Every structure is written in structure tokens, then in C-alpha cells.
Image (cartoon, one colour):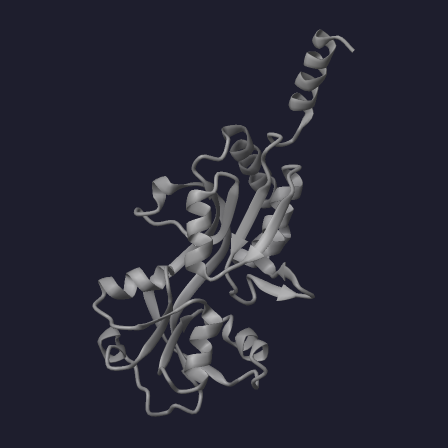
Length: 241
């Protein structure tokens, strides 16, 4: 085989490859039932299903992994071929990622154990007297800090709930739609937790985003795929549109 033929063959392979030869898409997230869960040792959940549908429509493959949020966030910031979800879009994060589109929506607020009738919250100021667990690097961490709260940091939402169940904290931050799922995840009665107070500043959409160095052609394929998936009934149900 001549050098010219070899050269043309390599060029052909590069043209038909869906990703650069050295690329392998890594898709990272945190445990956050029911959006991101683990089933049969695989990453699952409603938002995960949407991300998988987007990748399929884009004719891309990804390796899904669940990490503590701070680690997932760091990987997505520093690894060129990494995607992350469900991440809130904030001014501080704007330039660090390419934003593909929302795959979750959150209306977050204070949650406690149902039997804790001593905890009364009618305002944000009321909540400041209680001990709160918040995941490190989570959108709630920055928001509560800005609002003047003190809190305990944990690696993921399951750890926060474990502290709550053990009465080592009084409150965690979550969406009222998800607390039943978390109770079941922790082998507790479905009504073990109760939602007390909505924090308006924590009503946010969770996006699928990519490292800002991901090649532009891959980003464009993901955005086109998102546009297709966002028109489906499955997408509308997850985001309650």
C-alpha cells in the first residue's frame, strides 16, 4: 500500500468518525432521585433518560458516572470531553460551559423529618435558627451563603438526608416532588419527610452542559439533538411544561 493510499485512508477514517479519534465522551452527574439514580449498577433516572435520548439523537455515545457534585463539577470544568447535568446556569458558571438545554426543573426549599413538629418556618429568617445540610458546590450552597445562612456541607444529597434522619441537622434542601423518592431510597416510609418552605431564589432549571473546550461540531450536534428531544412528550413531562 503506497503512502498516498494510506494517507487517503486515514483521512476517510477521520471524516466518518463521530468523534475525534482520541475523544471519549464522559457524562457526569450527582445522585439526585428521581432525576439521577442508580439502578442495577447503572446511572438512571428521568433526567438521565433525557440526556441519553439527546446523545442518541446526536449519534454520540457517553460513559455515565455518578460522583459527589463538587467532583463532577471539577471534571466537567477541566476535562475537554465531559458533559454534566443537571447543572444550574448562573452568571458565575456562564463562561465555563457550553449550555445545551434544560433537562430538569427544581423548586427547592426546606425539608425536615415529619415528626419534627418543633420546627416552624414562615420566612427565610425563621430558617436561620436551624442547622441545615447542603451539598458542597451545589447551587443552594452559594444562594444560602448570599442570604446569610450558616450550614453543614456534605458530598451529596444522600449524605445530607442521612444527617437529617439521624437528627444531626434539622433541615435539608430539596424539591417537594422528590422527597417521597428519597425516603424510599433510604428504606424509610414514603411519608417520612415533609416540605416546609419554598425558597423562591432556588427555583431553577437544571441543564445539560459541556466543557467549554468541547469541539464546536460536537456541541452543535448536541444542540440540534436537544431541539428534537425537547419537542417530545417525555421531555414535557419531565420539565412539567
